[in-house]
Image (cartoon, rainbow, N blue to C red; front, side, top):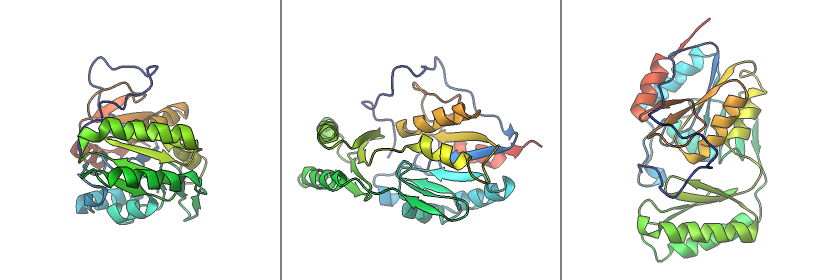
Length: 262
């Protein structure tokens, strides 16, 4: 999977960069890293299951965990189980399904109760995908995703369906990179970041959210509100992030170079 969904436009009140954002500094004082997975730590792929573990990524995450005294978390739209599969369980702290699943550094896991309407969304998405090759339905229990990267001619129909269902069910509509998701309301990547920052070992640190997707804007905003910043991965677009990196390779290189300033 690659590229930004051209119809997934962020809110107009976010600043529009006039040129590519500058790269983030490699020397930071007591940072806390919050990292999206797809498009940030791992290249986008045609299907969700096509993203697999990578030795460099796993080794780097474990090294960062030691270097920053545990202040590293993956904050993703994927489930915790998928995060652990792809990262080879390198991190204790992780948030899945846009904050609906969250595991603290001490191993405590909190999973929000699924809204009953998620089953309605899953059924409707499956009916939609049944005669549309390339459209994939992802059932995350607390949310339902409709991927159309493999059938981009279905983008308008998929978005229209998700919009109608959101209005009918009260589920939260989350647009992403060639995917729409209907989720149990109440959380996002920003609420997950904020919750981590209230706990050890993140308390008192400077939050840095690294993401590529519109779903990461909540994380960028939350990091800024707590004295930190966001890093946008990929092409410049309206964003709350202060810094930018070109792609997954640039992210891994930056993380590898990151030094904590005493």
